[in-house]
Amino acid sequence: MKLLENKTVIITGASRGIGKGIALVLASHGANIAFTYSKSVDSANDLIKEMSKFDVNCKAYQSDAASFEDSQKFVDQVIEDFGTIDVLINNAGITKDNLLMRMNEDDFDKVIEVNLKSVFNMVKATQRTFLKNRSGSIINISSIVGIKGNAGQSNYAASKAGIIGFSKSIALELGSRNIRSNVVAPGFIQTEMTDKLNQEVVNQWISGIPLKRGGTPTDVANLCLFLSSDLSSFITGQVINVDGGMLT
Ligand code: NAP
Image (cartoon, rainbow, N blue to C red; front, side, top):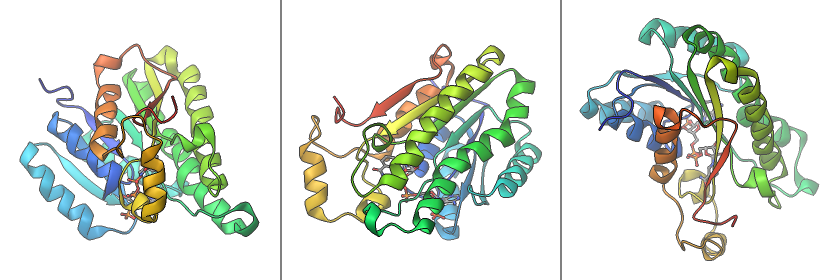
């Protein structure tokens, strides 16, 4: 059974990693996909080719999630191209890890802008459509680091914790209009973001996971599929971990 037939889904940062995994799983369930990327034009085009097998509409947009203006323009264009928006998945994110002692102001500001302000930008840009439709599902990709903190990631943890507070507030503001807002908090998921870590750090993370493996983009995507679909129509304001039990 296809869960998202005729639904239009926006995903920020889907040229690779978790965003790409979400795009593929949702498209396999019949969703039309409008996704953004920052620089990876070739990967974005490859993903469009890969999704052609699902017989859905799919379009890539180069758009900086950190920019309020870009986000408005992007959403206006999606409405023009697809007619409406049913689901917003805020996935774009970066890391600029360092101990506080060595972290400079730009490392802090940039991570907050791309990871947290982007969520504000995109929810602002899409809320009019959701209000008009009296329906919408907003899914914000945080991290277990936003729940428990992590040495060397104070900027990243702050941005991901901020997403949780923002998302719960939006759930309270927009619930009466049937607009849901939930947070997905992945644990250790193997993508280019984690490929930057050395093997010793990777082994350490994995040994602390009860299921004894790193997650895959598909693991995260399957939860996004559920939260995008009507199967989750009574679920809002929640933070759901996809972490192999790491935070248990
Ligand atoms: P990734 O492999 O580094 O991919 C990041 C994606 O975001 C790329 O598509 C990138 O586009 C896009 N992007 C970056 N900056 C952008 C901007 N300013 N505007 C628009 N798009 C932008 O990362 P990932 O591991 O898939 O992570 C995806 C999300 O999951 C992030 O929010 C991350 O914090 C979160 N997360 C990841 C893990 C993990 O273990 N991997 C764990 C917890 C949470 P380009 O390709 O053009 O650069």
